[in-house]
Image (cartoon, rainbow, N blue to C red; front, side):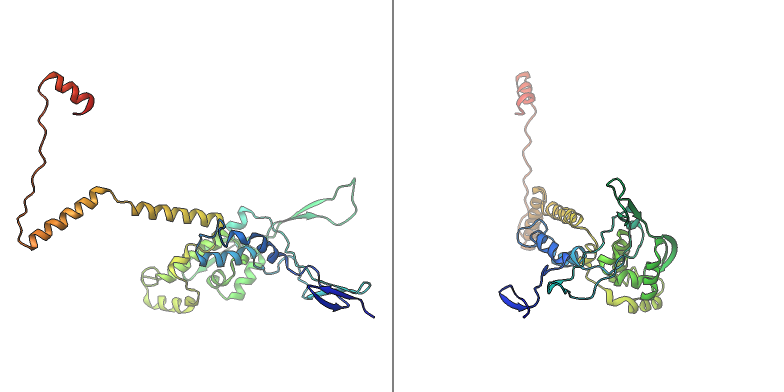
Length: 298
């Protein structure tokens, strides 16, 4: 008779599930206090938090590995079933990758398989093959010389245009500051289509807008797209400081407005407008008065 196991209060015959959560969801559970309640990122806009959580903790498209599509793996000797783990390959972030479009590829650091020599493993660094190509953006009406990989070229061909690739690729797969900047510029053009999108060619403007209008978002969300949490906090603090500075008004402005309102009221009601000038204090005459005025201002 097969062994029976208890898992989460349920008796299961012949197998037991272990490691019930994928790695990315487990990391989010450890970090979710930042985004909810009184966390440091809880003050950020909801639309940014929704995109940032998907960007930081969402599953990326497989590039460097082949994912096992089986949900469970059974050990035929013990009869224990374990959930298949998917731990993405760690890609080292580089400045060059942020300046180009590498299509999810990146620099990999690891150890070579083989015999251990003097208790040391041989380390290797793998860099993808980069080539510089020229791309044209229909929305921005501009050419860009970009460092890309073969996978990026394949993805652009699959998306049919360079603009479709930039706008439809998820943030975690785009993973490039240059790509995020391009997306923000394109979305601003689509948001202000009557002013910025092909201003000298209305016919071309309508064609381009109909082609990419499905990617539109509100103007308030555009500048937040692609920002890392620390960058978003800095942006939020700047906006709050600017809003606070605009809310501060000198008293002379409020006094001037009240005076103008009072004079306008008197003029409408045909009331006399008599403004008595402020009395000017005479200048000191004696030496004693001059010294007192110099020292104490009176």
